[in-house]
Image 1 (tube, protein in one colour):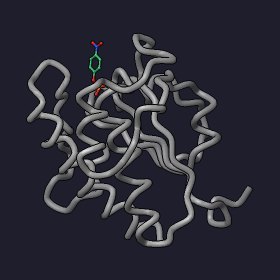
Image 2 (cartoon, helix red, strand yellow):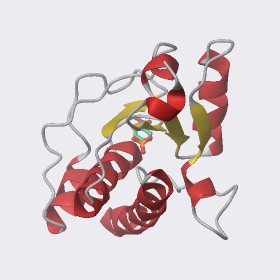
Image 3 (cartoon, protein in one colour):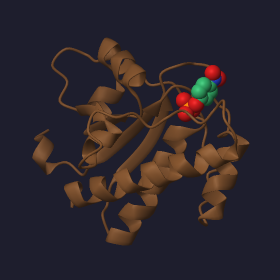
Length: 157
Ligand code: 4NP
């Protein structure tokens, strides 16, 4: 299919798919809805630690604080076939990006980059992993993924 004819399909990828990428998916869904942008959105982890599990309770509470329910999201692992299903694959940090590059099929057409590459002035930067910190770190994550989501929606519409 001609990629310019496709509805955007965006995959957000972190390590565990329970903290950063579910928040990024939720923020993008909210920003896309606000802007009237029709897009597919999903998230995944490069690791298999949390397959089938809901997001971290701290991520669920953080999203709930902004009126968004992510409690039914389910962790899954990123796979090579994602490169054919998604037009944009956005890694939350450099290690996630390297892991995705390792599984990317030759000749895929998905655009693969760091999520913060979309934010002027934050190119090349990672969204820090809040997993080992306290709940306040999840608010920082939310702010960063929301900012990136707004830029992504502007880029896609
Ligand atoms: P995430 O955070 O990659 O943002 O979902 C993590 C979740 C789980 C683990 C590490 C980071 N873990 O080691 O289980």
